[in-house]
Image (tube, one colour):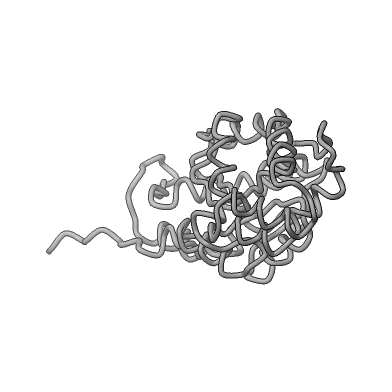
Length: 252
């Protein structure tokens, strides 16, 4: 990774298998492999987009896999119960919240009922906003989902880093210009390096002070000038500063 480039203005995290760990092993008759297979069907994708309810999803899945719908419901209830937040990731996100130059978002393929049930599983205030597939009617790796997120967070793709455990979802993000990385043990270390390298700190200082960079003479006199601010704005090429307007000069 080129750490001389500007660090991200926004970090977008997946939820399942990134923020949360969970187990597909249940006390039901449905093996973990089959439970995961249900998650990879067009029926489940339709549920994730909010096109059908969870109960309808279970009924259709029962027909496809020749399983009792109540057994499927119980297996997924146990899987949801097993959800646990990754405390290292949560701690990392809490630290990021202290930096006003960075915003943190979640982007998840998850059905409406499932998301409502995991509402108590973590402190959602660690995110500036959460985007779910059921709410927007689209799911990863559909490119329009990533474009929807970019439009609503008002950032360009190269200003965003996307973290997901699935390579196909990362590829979708990269296809619209987002810097994407497959989640793994080195992920938080990599993000720390990206944000806290000397170059990263320098960029973040510019982000935070883009409209406040006054000039100082050799004699220590501080004065406001338009050139320094406009130079920083041009270097950043950032939507945040596109609407920068130099203060009007006094007449005369």
